[in-house]
Length: 202
Image (cartoon, rainbow, N blue to C red; front, top):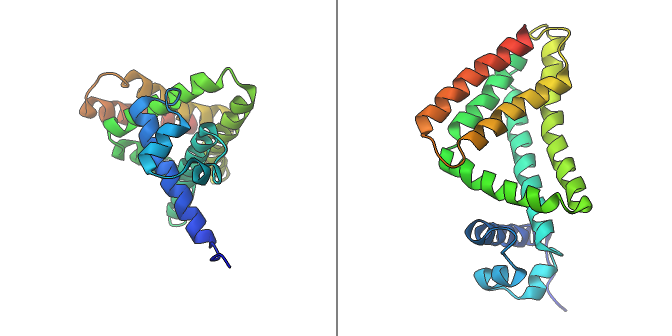
């Protein structure tokens, strides 16, 4: 009788595969990376990898989902002791400031390449939209909470405000993708934070 494989073992194995895949994606680029590259890097059989993931596209989607879910869960845990919606927005800007520019550039290059690749494949575009909608919904809930408590203006368009928040972060990241200094980047984040608050408070 073969030994029983626990869920914890499966989760650990999936995490190992995703970590190896991420290494290859960052080193070679998403499109240039093959399953064989991931197999060689991990020293696992192709069959073992395919028993967890059907394609490198599925690996990417899982990585993105895991990162988004971790952000939402960690932030939500912090928010339990942070009833003010304004403080929750400040916390999110603090998260941006804590992330190094080098780490941001690494992830941005990775995401941009996949987005261009997915744009030509409707199924992947749909999966990407599902991922992006989680970020918007997360921020919309904060904005809605701020309206209810009277912290934010009552006529605030929560959908527009949520897109503004993420656009500030993503747009600034694009501006600094190839050049720029850490101190300048964080200084501009501070200014963008003030502008976002002017918009949502009125």
